[in-house]
Amino acid sequence: MILLVLCTLTVIIVLMSQDARRDEERATQRRAQVLGLTFVDTSNSDKPLYKDILRIDELRQLRVIPLYADAHNINFGITNNTSQQTMKSLRSRFLDQRVSFNLISETGFRDYIRLYDPPKQVIYQDIKFSGENNDLFTQVTQTLEQVLADDILAYLVKQTYELKGSDIHLECQKNNVRIRMRVDGVLHPIAVLSYEKYSQLLSSIAIAANVSKNTNDAQTGHINKTYKMATGEQVTTNLRVETVPTVYGQDVVMRLFNLNMELLNLDKLGLSESERAAVDDVIRHPTGLVLIVGPTGSGKTTTLYSLINTLNSPERKIITLEDPVEYFLSGIVQIPVAGDENKLGFAEKLRAVLRLDPDVVMIGEIRDQDTARTGLQAALTGHLVLSTFHAGSAAAALTRMLDAIGINPLFSSAMHLVMAQRLVRRLDDTTKQPYQPDEALKTQLKSVLDTMPPGVERPNLDNVTLYKAGASTDNPFGYKGQMALREQLLMTPGVQEILRLPPNQVTTDILEKKAIEDGMVTMLQDGILKVLRGETTLEEVYRVVG
Image 1 (spheres, rainbow, N blue to C red):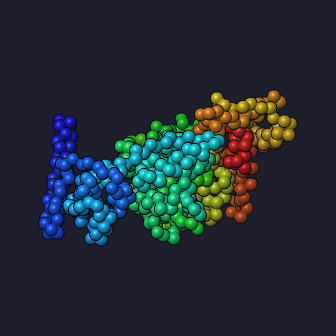
Image 2 (image 1 turned 120 degrees about the horizontal axis):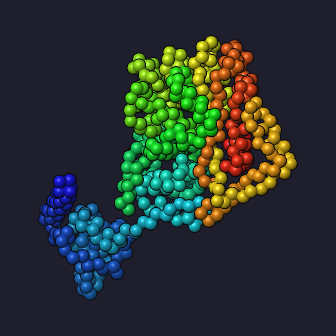
Image 3 (image 1 turned 30 degrees about the vertical axis):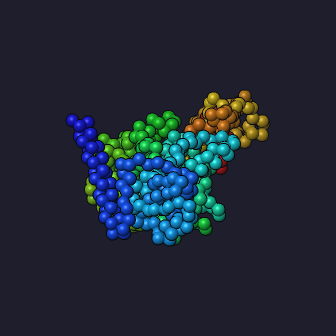
Protein backbone atom coordinates (compact mmCIF):
# COMPACT_ATOMS: atom_id res chain seq x y z
CA MET A 1 0.00 0.00 0.00
CA ILE A 2 2.84 2.42 0.95
CA LEU A 3 4.69 1.60 -2.30
CA LEU A 4 1.53 2.35 -4.29
CA VAL A 5 1.15 5.71 -2.56
CA LEU A 6 4.81 6.61 -3.24
CA CYS A 7 4.48 5.64 -6.90
CA THR A 8 1.30 7.71 -7.20
CA LEU A 9 3.01 10.72 -5.60
CA THR A 10 5.96 10.38 -8.00
CA VAL A 11 3.63 10.31 -11.01
CA ILE A 12 1.77 13.38 -9.70
CA ILE A 13 5.04 15.32 -9.21
CA VAL A 14 6.22 14.43 -12.74
CA LEU A 15 2.87 15.46 -14.24
CA MET A 16 2.91 18.75 -12.30
CA SER A 17 6.43 19.44 -13.62
CA GLN A 18 5.30 18.71 -17.18
CA ASP A 19 2.25 20.95 -16.78
CA ALA A 20 4.45 23.81 -15.52
CA ARG A 21 6.77 23.43 -18.53
CA ARG A 22 3.82 23.43 -20.96
CA ASP A 23 2.44 26.57 -19.31
CA GLU A 24 5.84 28.28 -19.65
CA GLU A 25 6.10 27.34 -23.34
CA ARG A 26 2.57 28.71 -24.03
CA ALA A 27 3.39 31.96 -22.21
CA THR A 28 6.61 32.29 -24.25
CA GLN A 29 4.64 31.68 -27.47
CA ARG A 30 2.21 34.49 -26.61
CA ARG A 31 5.16 36.76 -25.85
CA ALA A 32 6.68 35.94 -29.28
CA GLN A 33 3.47 36.99 -30.99
CA VAL A 34 3.56 40.33 -29.22
CA LEU A 35 7.22 40.88 -30.21
CA GLY A 36 6.68 39.71 -33.77
CA LEU A 37 9.17 36.83 -33.39
CA THR A 38 8.98 33.18 -34.34
CA PHE A 39 8.54 30.89 -31.32
CA VAL A 40 10.39 27.57 -30.95
CA ASP A 41 9.29 25.00 -28.38
CA THR A 42 12.53 23.29 -27.26
CA SER A 43 10.93 20.98 -24.71
CA ASN A 44 10.54 18.02 -27.08
CA SER A 45 12.89 18.88 -29.95
CA ASP A 46 16.37 17.56 -30.70
CA LYS A 47 19.14 19.86 -29.54
CA PRO A 48 22.11 19.87 -31.94
CA LEU A 49 25.11 21.75 -30.53
CA TYR A 50 27.16 24.28 -32.51
CA LYS A 51 30.19 24.86 -30.30
CA ASP A 52 32.28 26.78 -32.84
CA ILE A 53 29.99 29.80 -33.11
CA LEU A 54 30.16 31.33 -29.62
CA ARG A 55 32.12 30.56 -26.48
CA ILE A 56 30.24 29.18 -23.46
CA ASP A 57 30.80 32.35 -21.45
CA GLU A 58 29.33 34.35 -24.36
CA LEU A 59 26.24 32.12 -24.44
CA ARG A 60 25.65 32.87 -20.76
CA GLN A 61 26.43 36.56 -20.99
CA LEU A 62 24.49 37.31 -24.19
CA ARG A 63 21.70 34.86 -23.36
CA VAL A 64 21.55 33.35 -26.86
CA ILE A 65 21.75 29.76 -28.14
CA PRO A 66 22.58 28.66 -31.73
CA LEU A 67 19.58 26.52 -32.75
CA TYR A 68 20.72 25.88 -36.31
CA ALA A 69 23.73 26.84 -38.44
CA ASP A 70 25.17 26.10 -41.84
CA ALA A 71 27.47 27.91 -44.30
CA HIS A 72 24.82 30.52 -45.13
CA ASN A 73 22.47 30.71 -42.11
CA ILE A 74 22.57 31.00 -38.32
CA ASN A 75 19.39 30.81 -36.28
CA PHE A 76 19.76 31.98 -32.66
CA GLY A 77 17.35 31.21 -29.85
CA ILE A 78 16.88 34.22 -27.59
CA THR A 79 14.94 34.84 -24.36
CA ASN A 80 12.89 37.68 -22.96
CA ASN A 81 16.09 38.95 -21.31
CA THR A 82 18.19 39.12 -24.50
CA SER A 83 18.84 42.75 -25.43
CA GLN A 84 18.25 44.41 -28.77
CA GLN A 85 21.89 45.51 -28.71
CA THR A 86 22.95 41.85 -28.53
CA MET A 87 20.87 40.99 -31.62
CA LYS A 88 22.33 43.95 -33.53
CA SER A 89 25.86 42.98 -32.50
CA LEU A 90 25.42 39.37 -33.66
CA ARG A 91 24.20 40.51 -37.11
CA SER A 92 27.32 42.69 -37.45
CA ARG A 93 29.57 39.89 -36.27
CA PHE A 94 28.32 37.25 -38.73
CA LEU A 95 28.09 39.27 -41.97
CA ASP A 96 28.72 36.22 -44.18
CA GLN A 97 25.58 34.44 -42.91
CA ARG A 98 21.93 35.28 -42.75
CA VAL A 99 21.21 35.75 -39.01
CA SER A 100 17.70 35.16 -37.63
CA PHE A 101 16.24 34.98 -34.12
CA ASN A 102 13.61 32.78 -32.49
CA LEU A 103 12.17 33.18 -28.99
CA ILE A 104 12.67 30.27 -26.59
CA SER A 105 11.65 29.86 -22.95
CA GLU A 106 13.97 30.50 -19.99
CA THR A 107 13.85 26.81 -19.10
CA GLY A 108 14.72 25.92 -22.68
CA PHE A 109 17.73 28.26 -22.49
CA ARG A 110 18.92 26.60 -19.25
CA ASP A 111 18.51 23.14 -20.82
CA TYR A 112 20.79 24.16 -23.69
CA ILE A 113 23.39 25.68 -21.33
CA ARG A 114 23.56 22.38 -19.43
CA LEU A 115 24.28 20.63 -22.74
CA TYR A 116 26.97 23.12 -23.77
CA ASP A 117 28.48 23.28 -20.27
CA PRO A 118 27.56 20.13 -18.31
CA PRO A 119 27.87 20.55 -14.53
CA LYS A 120 31.12 19.09 -13.27
CA GLN A 121 30.81 15.98 -11.14
CA VAL A 122 31.82 16.87 -7.60
CA ILE A 123 34.09 14.35 -5.89
CA TYR A 124 34.20 14.86 -2.15
CA GLN A 125 37.49 13.81 -0.61
CA ASP A 126 37.50 12.07 2.76
CA ILE A 127 39.64 14.12 5.11
CA LYS A 128 42.62 12.34 6.65
CA PHE A 129 45.20 13.99 8.86
CA SER A 130 48.88 13.45 8.29
CA GLY A 131 52.10 15.33 8.81
CA GLU A 132 52.12 16.48 5.15
CA ASN A 133 48.56 17.22 4.07
CA ASN A 134 49.09 19.96 1.46
CA ASP A 135 47.62 18.11 -1.53
CA LEU A 136 44.44 17.14 0.30
CA PHE A 137 44.16 20.66 1.74
CA THR A 138 44.25 22.08 -1.80
CA GLN A 139 41.77 19.51 -3.14
CA VAL A 140 39.25 20.15 -0.37
CA THR A 141 39.59 23.92 -0.88
CA GLN A 142 38.93 23.58 -4.62
CA THR A 143 35.93 21.33 -4.01
CA LEU A 144 34.31 23.66 -1.49
CA GLU A 145 34.69 26.63 -3.84
CA GLN A 146 32.53 24.96 -6.51
CA VAL A 147 29.61 23.57 -4.48
CA LEU A 148 26.56 25.16 -2.88
CA ALA A 149 26.74 26.61 0.64
CA ASP A 150 24.41 23.94 2.10
CA ASP A 151 26.63 21.24 0.60
CA ILE A 152 29.69 22.81 2.24
CA LEU A 153 28.03 22.70 5.66
CA ALA A 154 26.76 19.14 5.18
CA TYR A 155 30.19 17.96 3.99
CA LEU A 156 32.03 19.57 6.92
CA VAL A 157 29.60 18.06 9.43
CA LYS A 158 29.78 14.62 7.84
CA GLN A 159 33.59 14.62 7.84
CA THR A 160 33.74 15.83 11.44
CA TYR A 161 31.38 13.09 12.58
CA GLU A 162 33.42 10.43 10.76
CA LEU A 163 36.65 11.69 12.33
CA LYS A 164 34.95 11.82 15.75
CA GLY A 165 35.63 15.56 15.92
CA SER A 166 33.88 17.98 18.23
CA ASP A 167 34.02 21.42 16.56
CA ILE A 168 34.23 23.19 13.21
CA HIS A 169 35.95 26.60 13.25
CA LEU A 170 35.43 29.18 10.48
CA GLU A 171 38.02 31.92 11.02
CA CYS A 172 38.24 35.16 9.05
CA GLN A 173 41.78 36.09 8.04
CA LYS A 174 43.17 38.93 5.93
CA ASN A 175 42.94 37.20 2.53
CA ASN A 176 40.61 34.24 3.10
CA VAL A 177 38.64 32.26 5.66
CA ARG A 178 40.38 29.33 7.33
CA ILE A 179 38.43 26.17 8.16
CA ARG A 180 39.73 24.08 11.03
CA MET A 181 38.37 20.95 12.69
CA ARG A 182 38.95 19.97 16.32
CA VAL A 183 39.63 16.25 16.68
CA ASP A 184 40.71 14.72 20.00
CA GLY A 185 41.00 18.22 21.42
CA VAL A 186 43.46 19.47 18.77
CA LEU A 187 42.67 21.80 15.84
CA HIS A 188 43.61 20.75 12.28
CA PRO A 189 43.42 23.07 9.21
CA ILE A 190 41.46 21.41 6.39
CA ALA A 191 40.72 24.16 3.82
CA VAL A 192 40.33 27.87 3.13
CA LEU A 193 37.41 29.69 1.51
CA SER A 194 37.31 32.87 -0.52
CA TYR A 195 35.30 35.66 1.11
CA GLU A 196 32.75 35.45 -1.71
CA LYS A 197 32.04 31.79 -1.00
CA TYR A 198 32.19 32.34 2.76
CA SER A 199 29.51 35.02 2.49
CA GLN A 200 27.20 32.42 0.93
CA LEU A 201 28.06 29.86 3.63
CA LEU A 202 27.55 32.41 6.41
CA SER A 203 24.11 33.29 5.01
CA SER A 204 23.14 29.61 4.99
CA ILE A 205 24.34 29.13 8.57
CA ALA A 206 22.62 32.30 9.78
CA ILE A 207 19.26 31.26 8.32
CA ALA A 208 19.45 27.71 9.72
CA ALA A 209 20.69 28.80 13.17
CA ASN A 210 18.34 31.81 13.42
CA VAL A 211 21.15 34.31 13.95
CA SER A 212 22.03 37.53 12.14
CA LYS A 213 24.71 37.66 9.48
CA ASN A 214 25.29 41.38 10.03
CA THR A 215 25.68 42.30 13.69
CA ASN A 216 28.31 43.61 16.07
CA ASP A 217 27.26 41.27 18.86
CA ALA A 218 28.26 37.71 19.68
CA GLN A 219 25.37 35.29 19.07
CA THR A 220 24.35 31.74 19.91
CA GLY A 221 22.16 29.58 17.68
CA HIS A 222 21.26 25.96 17.02
CA ILE A 223 20.97 23.96 13.79
CA ASN A 224 18.99 20.73 13.79
CA LYS A 225 18.05 19.76 10.24
CA THR A 226 18.80 17.31 7.45
CA TYR A 227 20.63 18.49 4.32
CA LYS A 228 20.52 16.70 0.98
CA MET A 229 23.82 17.10 -0.86
CA ALA A 230 24.20 17.29 -4.63
CA THR A 231 25.39 13.67 -4.53
CA GLY A 232 21.98 12.65 -3.13
CA GLU A 233 23.45 11.82 0.28
CA GLN A 234 21.51 13.06 3.30
CA VAL A 235 23.37 14.50 6.31
CA THR A 236 21.62 15.18 9.61
CA THR A 237 23.15 18.02 11.60
CA ASN A 238 22.80 18.84 15.29
CA LEU A 239 24.99 21.86 16.00
CA ARG A 240 25.39 24.63 18.53
CA VAL A 241 26.50 27.73 16.63
CA GLU A 242 28.54 30.54 18.18
CA THR A 243 29.33 33.67 16.15
CA VAL A 244 31.53 36.63 17.04
CA PRO A 245 32.61 39.69 15.00
CA THR A 246 36.37 39.95 14.46
CA VAL A 247 38.73 42.36 12.71
CA TYR A 248 38.22 40.71 9.31
CA GLY A 249 34.64 39.47 9.59
CA GLN A 250 32.28 37.22 11.52
CA ASP A 251 33.89 34.05 12.89
CA VAL A 252 31.79 30.95 13.50
CA VAL A 253 32.37 27.95 15.77
CA MET A 254 29.98 25.01 15.42
CA ARG A 255 29.91 22.40 18.18
CA LEU A 256 28.65 18.96 17.10
CA PHE A 257 26.32 16.99 19.32
CA ASN A 258 26.48 13.23 18.91
CA LEU A 259 22.96 11.86 18.47
CA ASN A 260 23.95 8.36 19.64
CA MET A 261 22.12 8.02 22.95
CA GLU A 262 24.02 4.81 23.74
CA LEU A 263 27.11 6.90 24.44
CA LEU A 264 25.29 8.80 27.22
CA ASN A 265 25.99 6.04 29.70
CA LEU A 266 27.94 6.18 32.96
CA ASP A 267 29.64 2.89 32.06
CA LYS A 268 31.23 4.57 29.03
CA LEU A 269 32.73 7.52 30.91
CA GLY A 270 35.82 5.64 32.12
CA LEU A 271 35.12 6.32 35.80
CA SER A 272 37.46 4.72 38.31
CA GLU A 273 36.05 2.57 41.08
CA SER A 274 36.12 5.42 43.62
CA GLU A 275 34.71 7.93 41.11
CA ARG A 276 31.85 5.60 40.22
CA ALA A 277 31.10 5.04 43.91
CA ALA A 278 30.67 8.81 44.41
CA VAL A 279 28.35 9.04 41.39
CA ASP A 280 26.34 6.03 42.54
CA ASP A 281 25.88 7.77 45.90
CA VAL A 282 24.30 10.71 44.04
CA ILE A 283 21.91 8.31 42.31
CA ARG A 284 20.99 6.57 45.58
CA HIS A 285 20.44 9.88 47.44
CA PRO A 286 19.05 12.26 44.79
CA THR A 287 19.14 15.53 46.72
CA GLY A 288 21.64 18.37 46.89
CA LEU A 289 23.70 20.26 44.37
CA VAL A 290 26.07 18.49 41.96
CA LEU A 291 28.47 20.55 39.80
CA ILE A 292 30.36 19.28 36.75
CA VAL A 293 33.30 21.64 36.32
CA GLY A 294 35.70 22.36 33.50
CA PRO A 295 36.47 24.64 30.54
CA THR A 296 34.68 24.52 27.20
CA GLY A 297 35.28 21.22 25.43
CA SER A 298 36.10 19.22 28.57
CA GLY A 299 33.18 16.78 28.27
CA LYS A 300 31.02 18.37 30.98
CA THR A 301 27.81 18.07 28.97
CA THR A 302 28.37 14.40 28.15
CA THR A 303 28.97 13.61 31.84
CA LEU A 304 25.91 15.60 32.87
CA TYR A 305 23.61 13.94 30.34
CA SER A 306 24.94 10.49 31.23
CA LEU A 307 24.01 11.16 34.84
CA ILE A 308 20.56 12.45 33.80
CA ASN A 309 20.07 9.40 31.57
CA THR A 310 20.83 7.10 34.51
CA LEU A 311 18.47 8.98 36.82
CA ASN A 312 15.68 8.88 34.22
CA SER A 313 12.94 6.54 35.42
CA PRO A 314 9.11 6.52 35.51
CA GLU A 315 9.23 7.32 39.25
CA ARG A 316 11.10 10.60 38.81
CA LYS A 317 10.11 13.89 37.21
CA ILE A 318 13.18 15.43 35.59
CA ILE A 319 13.18 18.94 34.14
CA THR A 320 16.07 20.60 32.33
CA LEU A 321 16.79 24.24 31.53
CA GLU A 322 19.18 24.53 28.60
CA ASP A 323 20.55 27.09 26.15
CA PRO A 324 20.21 25.40 23.73
CA VAL A 325 18.80 21.90 24.24
CA GLU A 326 21.71 19.74 23.11
CA TYR A 327 20.45 16.14 23.39
CA PHE A 328 16.79 15.19 23.18
CA LEU A 329 15.90 12.59 25.81
CA SER A 330 12.55 10.83 26.04
CA GLY A 331 10.78 10.88 29.41
CA ILE A 332 12.38 14.22 30.40
CA VAL A 333 10.87 17.71 30.27
CA GLN A 334 13.42 19.87 28.45
CA ILE A 335 12.95 23.65 28.42
CA PRO A 336 15.02 25.89 26.12
CA VAL A 337 16.08 29.28 27.46
CA ALA A 338 16.24 31.92 24.73
CA GLY A 339 19.71 33.23 24.03
CA ASP A 340 18.78 36.89 24.49
CA GLU A 341 17.34 36.20 27.96
CA ASN A 342 20.28 34.34 29.45
CA LYS A 343 20.96 36.63 32.39
CA LEU A 344 17.43 36.64 33.75
CA GLY A 345 16.00 33.71 31.85
CA PHE A 346 17.65 30.88 33.77
CA ALA A 347 16.83 32.18 37.25
CA GLU A 348 13.27 33.20 36.39
CA LYS A 349 12.50 29.94 34.62
CA LEU A 350 14.17 27.93 37.39
CA ARG A 351 11.80 29.46 39.94
CA ALA A 352 8.85 28.55 37.69
CA VAL A 353 10.19 25.02 37.21
CA LEU A 354 10.41 24.44 40.97
CA ARG A 355 6.65 25.03 41.20
CA LEU A 356 6.14 22.02 38.90
CA ASP A 357 7.28 19.63 41.66
CA PRO A 358 10.33 18.09 39.93
CA ASP A 359 12.54 15.49 41.59
CA VAL A 360 15.59 16.39 39.53
CA VAL A 361 16.45 19.71 37.91
CA MET A 362 19.28 20.16 35.44
CA ILE A 363 20.56 23.68 34.74
CA GLY A 364 22.64 23.76 31.56
CA GLU A 365 25.11 26.17 33.17
CA ILE A 366 25.20 28.38 36.27
CA ARG A 367 26.19 31.76 34.85
CA ASP A 368 25.12 34.39 37.39
CA GLN A 369 24.48 35.01 41.06
CA ASP A 370 20.69 34.80 40.81
CA THR A 371 20.79 31.35 39.19
CA ALA A 372 23.37 30.15 41.75
CA ARG A 373 21.23 31.26 44.69
CA THR A 374 18.02 29.81 43.25
CA GLY A 375 19.76 26.51 42.48
CA LEU A 376 21.15 26.38 46.02
CA GLN A 377 17.70 26.99 47.48
CA ALA A 378 16.26 24.20 45.32
CA ALA A 379 18.97 21.80 46.54
CA LEU A 380 18.11 22.67 50.17
CA THR A 381 14.41 21.88 49.67
CA GLY A 382 14.80 18.23 48.68
CA HIS A 383 15.61 18.49 44.96
CA LEU A 384 18.62 17.13 43.15
CA VAL A 385 20.10 20.00 41.14
CA LEU A 386 22.68 19.21 38.47
CA SER A 387 24.62 21.85 36.58
CA THR A 388 27.86 22.70 34.82
CA PHE A 389 30.18 25.46 35.96
CA HIS A 390 33.28 27.08 34.52
CA ALA A 391 36.22 26.79 36.90
CA GLY A 392 39.79 25.51 36.82
CA SER A 393 39.38 22.91 39.55
CA ALA A 394 36.83 21.47 41.97
CA ALA A 395 38.11 23.61 44.85
CA ALA A 396 38.05 26.73 42.66
CA ALA A 397 34.42 25.97 41.77
CA LEU A 398 33.45 25.98 45.45
CA THR A 399 35.15 29.29 46.16
CA ARG A 400 33.56 30.85 43.07
CA MET A 401 30.15 29.59 44.18
CA LEU A 402 30.76 31.14 47.61
CA ASP A 403 31.57 34.44 45.91
CA ALA A 404 28.31 34.18 43.94
CA ILE A 405 25.93 33.35 46.80
CA GLY A 406 27.63 35.31 49.59
CA ILE A 407 27.42 34.26 53.24
CA ASN A 408 25.14 31.23 53.54
CA PRO A 409 25.67 28.78 56.41
CA LEU A 410 23.59 26.17 54.59
CA PHE A 411 25.87 26.09 51.53
CA SER A 412 27.92 23.13 52.77
CA SER A 413 24.71 21.19 53.49
CA ALA A 414 23.38 21.82 49.99
CA MET A 415 26.52 20.73 48.14
CA HIS A 416 26.74 17.04 47.32
CA LEU A 417 29.56 16.59 44.81
CA VAL A 418 31.88 18.68 42.64
CA MET A 419 33.47 16.82 39.73
CA ALA A 420 36.11 18.65 37.70
CA GLN A 421 37.44 17.19 34.48
CA ARG A 422 39.63 17.82 31.43
CA LEU A 423 40.09 15.74 28.28
CA VAL A 424 43.45 14.42 27.10
CA ARG A 425 44.29 12.38 24.02
CA ARG A 426 44.57 8.64 24.51
CA LEU A 427 47.65 6.87 23.13
CA ASP A 428 47.19 4.54 20.19
CA ASP A 429 48.27 1.17 21.61
CA THR A 430 49.41 -0.04 18.18
CA THR A 431 51.94 2.76 17.67
CA LYS A 432 53.00 4.01 21.13
CA GLN A 433 56.73 3.91 21.85
CA PRO A 434 58.16 2.88 25.26
CA TYR A 435 61.03 4.74 26.93
CA GLN A 436 62.75 4.80 30.31
CA PRO A 437 62.53 8.11 32.22
CA ASP A 438 65.74 9.59 33.59
CA GLU A 439 66.28 10.33 37.27
CA ALA A 440 65.21 13.98 36.95
CA LEU A 441 61.88 12.93 35.45
CA LYS A 442 61.39 10.26 38.10
CA THR A 443 61.95 12.91 40.77
CA GLN A 444 59.35 15.11 39.09
CA LEU A 445 56.83 12.26 39.00
CA LYS A 446 57.57 11.34 42.61
CA SER A 447 56.92 14.93 43.73
CA VAL A 448 53.38 14.66 42.35
CA LEU A 449 52.73 11.18 43.74
CA ASP A 450 53.95 12.18 47.21
CA THR A 451 51.08 14.70 47.47
CA MET A 452 48.43 12.03 46.90
CA PRO A 453 45.94 11.32 49.70
CA PRO A 454 46.84 8.93 52.47
CA GLY A 455 45.70 5.41 51.69
CA VAL A 456 46.02 5.74 47.92
CA GLU A 457 48.57 3.27 46.54
CA ARG A 458 51.62 4.93 44.97
CA PRO A 459 53.17 3.15 41.98
CA ASN A 460 56.81 2.04 42.19
CA LEU A 461 58.98 4.22 39.95
CA ASP A 462 62.19 2.13 40.13
CA ASN A 463 61.73 0.29 36.81
CA VAL A 464 58.85 2.27 35.38
CA THR A 465 58.26 2.45 31.62
CA LEU A 466 56.60 5.48 30.06
CA TYR A 467 55.25 5.88 26.53
CA LYS A 468 55.33 8.53 23.86
CA ALA A 469 53.22 8.83 20.72
CA GLY A 470 54.37 6.86 17.70
CA ALA A 471 53.26 7.24 14.11
CA SER A 472 51.86 5.18 11.25
CA THR A 473 50.37 5.81 7.83
CA ASP A 474 46.85 5.48 9.21
CA ASN A 475 47.57 7.42 12.39
CA PRO A 476 50.40 9.93 11.97
CA PHE A 477 49.86 11.58 15.36
CA GLY A 478 49.90 8.48 17.57
CA TYR A 479 46.70 9.22 19.50
CA LYS A 480 43.29 7.61 19.23
CA GLY A 481 40.31 9.11 21.02
CA GLN A 482 40.16 11.00 24.28
CA MET A 483 39.90 10.21 27.97
CA ALA A 484 39.00 12.31 30.99
CA LEU A 485 41.22 13.37 33.86
CA ARG A 486 38.99 13.93 36.88
CA GLU A 487 38.95 15.04 40.47
CA GLN A 488 35.96 14.64 42.78
CA LEU A 489 35.54 16.88 45.78
CA LEU A 490 33.21 15.29 48.33
CA MET A 491 31.55 17.10 51.21
CA THR A 492 33.57 15.46 53.98
CA PRO A 493 33.24 16.86 57.53
CA GLY A 494 36.60 18.60 57.09
CA VAL A 495 35.53 20.32 53.86
CA GLN A 496 32.17 21.30 55.35
CA GLU A 497 33.91 22.85 58.33
CA ILE A 498 36.00 25.06 56.03
CA LEU A 499 32.92 26.07 54.02
CA ARG A 500 31.26 27.31 57.22
CA LEU A 501 34.06 29.83 57.78
CA PRO A 502 33.56 33.46 56.71
CA PRO A 503 33.98 33.66 52.90
CA ASN A 504 37.10 35.83 53.16
CA GLN A 505 38.85 33.01 55.05
CA VAL A 506 38.03 30.30 52.47
CA THR A 507 40.63 30.01 49.71
CA THR A 508 41.04 27.52 46.90
CA ASP A 509 44.37 26.31 48.32
CA ILE A 510 42.94 25.64 51.78
CA LEU A 511 39.95 23.77 50.34
CA GLU A 512 42.09 21.68 47.99
CA LYS A 513 44.57 20.79 50.73
CA LYS A 514 41.77 19.59 53.03
CA ALA A 515 40.04 17.69 50.21
CA ILE A 516 43.29 15.85 49.40
CA GLU A 517 43.76 15.02 53.10
CA ASP A 518 40.22 13.59 53.03
CA GLY A 519 40.87 11.42 49.96
CA MET A 520 40.61 13.55 46.79
CA VAL A 521 42.90 12.64 43.89
CA THR A 522 43.57 15.78 41.84
CA MET A 523 43.38 15.94 38.05
CA LEU A 524 47.17 16.20 37.84
CA GLN A 525 47.60 13.14 40.04
CA ASP A 526 44.96 11.26 38.06
CA GLY A 527 46.81 12.21 34.88
CA ILE A 528 50.17 10.98 36.22
CA LEU A 529 48.58 7.65 37.20
CA LYS A 530 47.21 7.27 33.66
CA VAL A 531 50.66 8.14 32.25
CA LEU A 532 52.22 5.41 34.40
CA ARG A 533 49.60 2.95 33.08
CA GLY A 534 50.60 3.81 29.50
CA GLU A 535 47.22 5.33 28.59
CA THR A 536 48.49 8.81 27.67
CA THR A 537 51.67 10.86 27.63
CA LEU A 538 53.20 13.19 30.17
CA GLU A 539 53.17 15.95 27.55
CA GLU A 540 49.40 15.58 27.13
CA VAL A 541 48.77 15.81 30.87
CA TYR A 542 50.85 18.97 31.27
CA ARG A 543 49.34 20.46 28.09
CA VAL A 544 45.84 20.13 29.50
CA VAL A 545 46.24 20.40 33.27
CA GLY A 546 49.40 22.52 33.49
